[in-house]
Length: 103
Image (cartoon, rainbow, N blue to C red; front, side):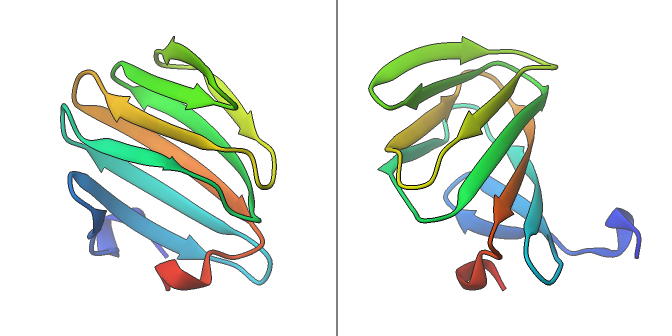
C-alpha cells in the first residue's frame, strides 16, 4: 500500500487521518489544522505520538508541554491526555492494540 492511495478521514474536527491497521496495532498519519483540539481523554491502548511538522501543545497526566518536529511522546495505557495544534501540524500516532473505532 502507499499513503498517497489512502483517503484521509476527519476523525475529530480538524484532525484528518490516514489510517493503517495491522493485526495488533494501528498507525495514523494526521494532518491537523491550526487551533484544532483533542479534549482530555484516556483509552486502554498504548500510544506513541511523533511530531513530524508544526508546533503542538500536549498534556499528559496533568503536565503540559510544547512539542516540535522530531519530538516523541509515549502515552501509557489509561493515562489522561489531550492536545492542541498551535500551528498546522503533521503527527504520527501508533496505537496498540488496534483502534477498532478508527476502522
